[in-house]
Amino acid sequence: MRLPEFFLFNQSTRRVYREMINPVLNLLVRMGISPNAVTTAGCVLSVLAGLIFSTGNFFLGGLTVALAGTCDILDGQLSRQTGQSSRFGAFYDSCLDRLSEAFILMGLAWYFAGGPALFWSPHTGHPDGYSPLTVMFIILAITGSFLTSYVRARAEAAGVTCTIGRMQRTERFVLLLVASALGSVPVAGVLLMKISLAVFAVLTNITAIHRIIYVGKTFLREKPLDAGRDNQK
Image 1 (cartoon, rainbow, N blue to C red):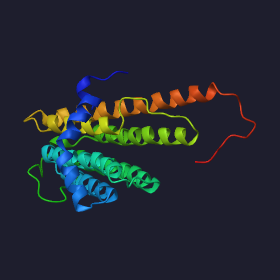
Image 2 (cartoon, rainbow, N blue to C red):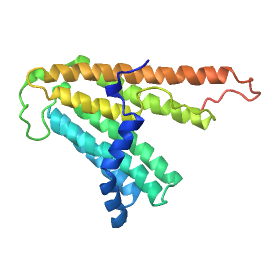
Image 3 (cartoon, one colour):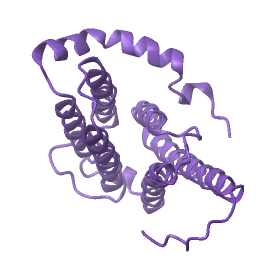
């Protein structure tokens, strides 16, 4: 399934954005900041974004997500530029990526579940956002996001490269930014955010299913092995 171009963080856009954040990268190099520290900062910002989203402040939440996404780009660039790439760094980054997405979406789930604001919010006491259906879509979005990454990890552990599908991590971040911008529109913002989260849930799960089918077809083309089925979970 081909998504509209504005949903995609394509190679051209990546290159332009990396050039924009090069001064920050160079500053981190001069300061001797480790890639793992940047990864941790990105996760902390994601937790903060989730807290902000829980208040219904979609615009500020989106800005915080943008900062977290920048950290996600910087840690990889920093590790390559400083020669600090490591297996642990890649493992640590992958684990915190999952936590980051979960916290952001949990914040949105809290808001749409009608939870009281954890701190002051201009939306406190307004039931406009209450929507069990939207909470269900958020749960599906978390499932689809995690499953997309899990299928890739399991496939690569079995020797199959699986990077297909439009809704990879960067695209998911971009879609969250688009959703945050739409959610900030006066009057119709909450409705637009609900629609965006439904789209997010559908597309992430389509990507996961696409990967499952691709890996399944790859395995079926192979000769059967004598060893028994791996039931490890």
